Length: 177
Image (cartoon, rainbow, N blue to C red; front, top):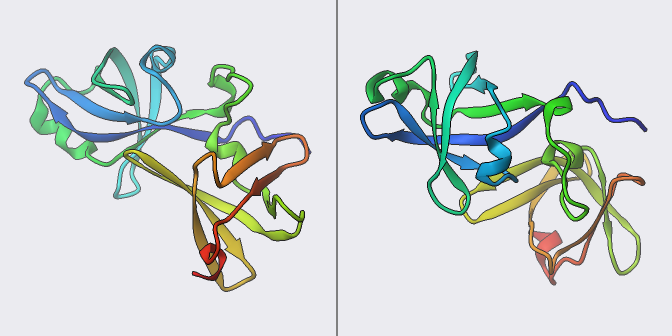
């Protein structure tokens, strides 16, 4: 199965305006600041659903998984406030290559989820839920139920992009929640 390289990849989420020059604090998804500097233009999907393109003027570090980003369209914190909680996206084709042990979240969505110990099918990945300090894989089990699986090495033991499956070792009770 070939991947659709025109899909949009969420590379960050705007947290809040910072300072007086219109910079925004951004939570980076799966990228460090150096990798994030690769992007010159980002698609922005606001909480309201409105979408627009933003031109990146500068990016600087604000911690391990955060950056301060300034866009050409915003030069003061008050107007930039409308971007709070917005998703920052790029076409998959523009994403830089990853290390062998890394994946883009968008590539995991749609993969089958298997129990690592037996190979039994548990469900299918329907989304990735991100947050500060913890990411979750949302897994559809049957037609009427989803569960959140913590994305930690002890539980998500393998992601096989070639066979399009995620192998998990769920702790007792996780699948019954």
